[in-house]
Length: 550
Image (cartoon, rainbow, N blue to C red; front, side, top):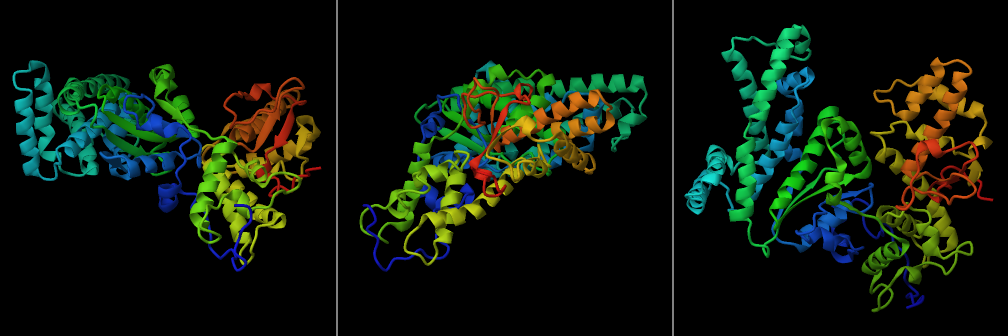
């Protein structure tokens, strides 16, 4: 339609094209969902890709929300329902973990048990003890005479009267059972153990060795065979109709926050990934989880010594991303949903309410160039423009630039929050870009600037030290000439972290192109960054950092 606004139309207060948080954006998601090709793969239970991986704001939750809105047979499990804090606070489990007993088998069994029971409860609508008993009678008749599935029936009978209780209660019960198994055997042996924090330090070497052997035997003997039979039973006799698809959905993006023990969370997530693969055997069933890219990277890093081989699980990952054309479609749909019938009975799109040019650039390019190619960024920028246009009848170039001030600051805050767990001092790192030219060589920043930053970081009282802070502290303890090489490593680590979070692009040398983290074809390591490498500050931060754009 090309600027056919009603003469009396003005942009009103609180106008927006949706919330940047998918959980609070249900109206727009329901009416304006754009499939960039990922939804069809996610919905297909025959496709192995079921672990949605991407950065904060890339659309993981939106994808899950659309699945929930458009598909039947959805089982939603909230992380809070998994009683993970209860597990992490177990003195008995922590005691054996500290001894060196590998509890990975238990964590795997915990997920398998949880999913198996959830599926059965959903399939047979089990909401009370009577319905549990009715199910057991039915399934006993189905597998009658099948000796291979006798263990599965035994397991179901053992837990069957608990099918109707909440997920949280079942997880706690499963945890209590292994605790009891570990403690009971020790009592039978006449061994009195102090399970309080640090209790393992009071043991002799002989006692530790005996307890480690005992703990391994208990954990490894816990229900393994029976649970494997349960998966076979689910695949062969319960979920055997390929036309009747069922989904289990867990959004665990924020599982790395402080409500569950640091070490435990990574083991639980790795065990969850392994369980997702195991349940692929049940073809009409798909377990779908969401994982932030940085969280997945940390899981792989922290559990590398536990025999976890990424190659075996790579086909489970659905890595999502967007291009400009797809994001433009997102904005068009949302603007149309907000403003349709305000101007005309025809559709209203981005070009209808934005100027034809801004600084000789198309406004859609101007806006999307100042995003990390994520829906959240683009929605946030347009919302900032709508807010700035309050009381006006059109959005001008000056309105866009005024909106950019607030938007750029908000996006920086968002970056720091997104990476707070892994890089809690990211704000200090970004500050080194303040008042710089939009592109510069590493060696154009004087060494004393880096040394001042190193001094700031080394004086911080922090609980977690990332690679930048570790290098800073190494420098403070070193003397010349070693300090010179450590300073060089500090620069490499600093700029690599800024690259990884999306704050900068890096052109390694005169022959290479500029590398950006959101470009999947690019690959950069900190070792490749040299003094002559060119740093490009991302436009998303230009206004906040007062970047010299000449």
